[in-house]
Amino acid sequence: MRTYREVAAELAAQIADGRWAPGHRLPTHRRLAAEYGIAVATATRVYAELERGGLVVGETGRGTFVRDRSLRLSSASESGGTDGREGTAVRADLAFTQPLSPSRADLLRTALRELAGAGDLDAVLRQQPPGGRPHDREVVADFLRSRDIPAHATEVVLTNGAQHALDLVVRAMFSPGDVIAVDDLTYPGFKSLARAHGLELAPIPTTATGPDLAALTRLCAHRPVRAIYTMPTLHNPLGWVLDASQRRELVSIARQHDLLLIEDAAYAFLADPAPRPLASAAPERTFWLSSLSKSVAAGLRFGMLVIPPAAAPAIGRTLRTTMASPSGLISAVAVRWLADGTVDSLEHAGCLAAGHHQRILHRELGHLHPIAHPRSYFAWLPIDPDQRMDRIAAELSRRGIRVCTADLFATTPHVPHGLRLALGSPATEELPSVLAEVRAVFDTVEPR
Image (cartoon, rainbow, N blue to C red; front, side, top):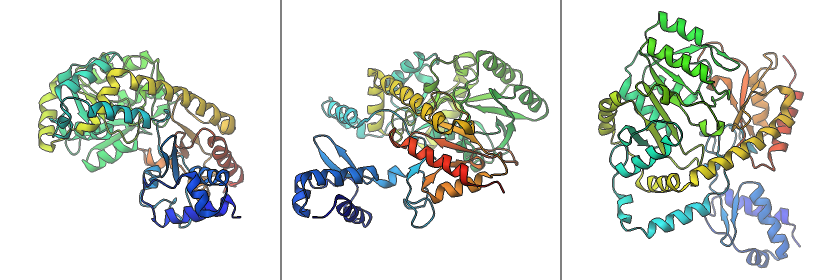
């Protein structure tokens, strides 16, 4: 009789060859057993092996389905499901941040059934008004006000994710050559936007607890800075949260030099409780933005942007020019979940899971002194320059573990040596062995 490993290897090859499209329902355990002449218990082990390898997903009461690996490895760029080295399968993606909330498939099925029974289902298929429907914006405004973000529906803009919100602000408010102050390590998506629109990024040194605000003051006194891009509540990649005193000083600097503030709150939900957002202290100059991509689901492209009242004409012109509006179907699901408490529940679960993953990280890699918020989805791992981050990353890649190197985040000519490890993609039960492999690489890569 054939072993479960032999059958699993044959099915894996068929999936890799494209015999079954993503989402295809595979035979039942009993039918698979009959086709291959194996016991039903062996068929169960076959599917378990394929699921461990990320090739299939089992859903209780529905069956086993071929998984869409292009989504699972969405941060792999053009690598086609490998780490960029031909023949090397990706074992763990520590580069892409995924929400650590429980399975949302049943929640989505319920939401879609409820939408199907709604009175005007056709509305979700129509082109949405630029910035979202008035009712949807009002629901989002109510949700944000519960989190100390002063928001009137007319100042809320719904977007296709946080990156879309950032692009909208950049297009509407800045011109090529404008100078934007940023942390010396910052979100790569904002770096790419600045490059695309010809903006100059002026890096601010960071301390253990946030940006060097004295250095920011000196910069503003000598350069024509137009705005500050900041992540005051759970910084990516360093994880710090600015305290109330730092926030007051940052707002004071912005007012003294008449600067706009771009407050990126993509991970702020993980730092609850946290000081009030900048938008609550300086609504007249703050663009606050976030999305549900990090808190609920990476594929739920639903962003929320709160704009200063004076920026409404410029943002409105850009919206009309680009006809930028979120999908009606996605908006309908997102707004329903914001209103009924589903988002609150998923974010709470994500916080608990993130805390658990951080404890695993510090147990496995504590001796490497990772830098992270205790409930963050990621951690910054400083590297001795003699070991070199490129050598560490290359060896991890050879072993099928993808990470982000510091050059993705750096805004200074001199790039510090470090890696960012995202902790959301590996399953909780797999994370210890993945991090043990990271530890082994640090132990075996000799200083140059």
